[in-house]
Image (cartoon, rainbow, N blue to C red; front, side, top):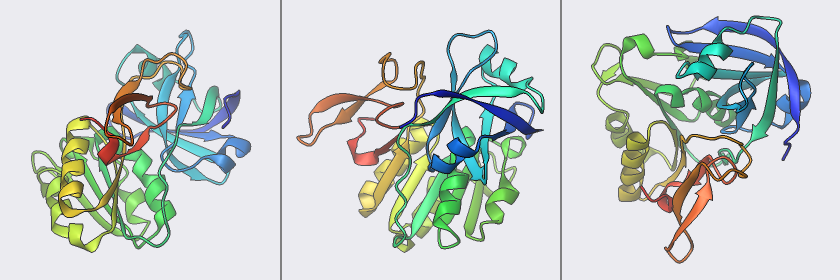
Length: 252
């Protein structure tokens, strides 16, 4: 695992919605070792604490990150311009272990959708992707997922785009056709997916969203309750031990 901070050149920047930005960062060394589900800890000018942002995709020597403006730090980051140098620590965390011989459903919710792109691309056209959003204005990365050539489903809470409802509805319809689920999104969504997976006896990996400060398990700020092998409560750190955990381990 690499913890050294490195500079990356911001070679392209896109605004996907009123609050969501798409950055393409060039660093050949880091791109070569980044796995699906990992994240980058990004230095924000004028701020001490870095911001953890999931890796959306890797293309050659480019690491792609897609993030939502949620506070002052990400607001400052959103004003970066093409050609700027962005300092990151990456790749961090344990990502998705994607076996070649399983039919996998990748489920993303809201800003949990971006890390599903690289994950689904790694699995290829045999996978299924289900992405859920609040409404049509929040929908992102549709064309990117379509290019994979897999079965692709989109939902919105209010029915303004795609299927009306939550991601669990289409998942339940196709769950007998898959072997494994990988999911990232809000905790209530992950909890419902985990329950559905348990009900149908499906392997399920979840990427947890949690506030992180250090990114390497030193500050203890992102600890979550996890069941150990005896079923007893223990604590692990989302940044170091995760963000991906087996769903049955998580104490919801």
